[in-house]
Length: 388
Length: 133
Image 1 (cartoon, helix red, strand yellow):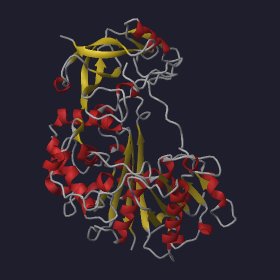
Image 2: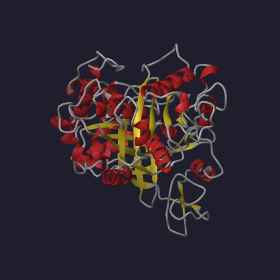
Image 3: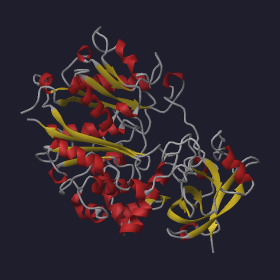
Image 4: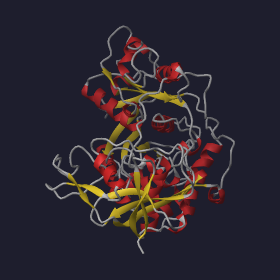
């Protein structure tokens, strides 16, 4: 029996994803994502009363979500908004929107946005980068910070470069046959191909690391009651959890501190959802590199700490495995578009639970969306469920 | 210096660190209230929120906690490959650094290292580390 204000996802949209989208502006992409998700929900902009969406401008202050109020709500004022890019994406955006919907602060919230690298006044960047004096000066960057955690995990548990390569090959090969993927048609890859690609930062080879690109995505959250007469089977937000360790990139991520980040969030999320990690039919996990998938399998409780490498290399995360991860090809092959890659993880999970994914996992009823970042120094996850 | 490499811009919090580095001394924020030694410097001690912390000398000796050999960097100013390492200082706090004077591939977790200051600009001297033995 679903409570009337149970939060559900009723609409999703992913724009085109590519290395570069020179024919688009950021506002054009954000609008397409937002409008696309609303249309997919069978709703109109007038039905929306909450906007947790990137506002790139021009028009208004870049990043200020209330700028959407002029375009959404059908002449009624918005009741809910958010200014932060991370609050507008993925599981974090979803849980905040779900909390608002459950509490009654808003009824129907659109979450999403886009990434487009600045190209002149029509595409002003949101926020200016400040050099970090204890990390940037050493040539530290996102790949290297994840590598420092991976290297320590390998030292402690004997995780091998080949196990990492198996993860990368498995997820990349899902993208090879996904027409929406940036790397569609490239591959297939073997672990040997990954190990033969050039080193970026040990233990990561080029093919262990995610791609970089541009694109947008969005989804719509409303109540189970409002969802009753909408076209798609609603996807229920069964549970969620978030964890934050420290500021991003200012200090190196340490395996002893964040190697298991997400464990507490997962325990709370699964308890809330009334399911366990082995009930999950499909995982939509942050894959900035191969190792981060291994780490999350442990933190989520799919396996014990230190056993993620052998599990991932056993075929368990493949489309026909016990714990399929990223059937769309993930950030390694489908798309990475800044913070909105987190939203693409929600889009894929919703498609899986609707039964409409490109690489559909048969009978998928429970999905987990895992987002993370900066080493990882934060983790946000949600448990989603099919409702009919 | 290598052109294009990011150069630290000392803040009121970090200026004593960089001034000491220029003199060849490693100093680390120490909180007398809770005993924590920490980096990066912050307005309040991350252990107890006391604002009465002060820089104290470090022996500059430590152990490599983790290391990655970086072959590709997103910006200019670095000679690759280099060993980017996390060092646990014996007397507390953790530093990100490069371990030099050893082939990057030979820098291993558990290696004993000591600080070795090297100038980057007139103002900034960086705390590299080298094998201690």
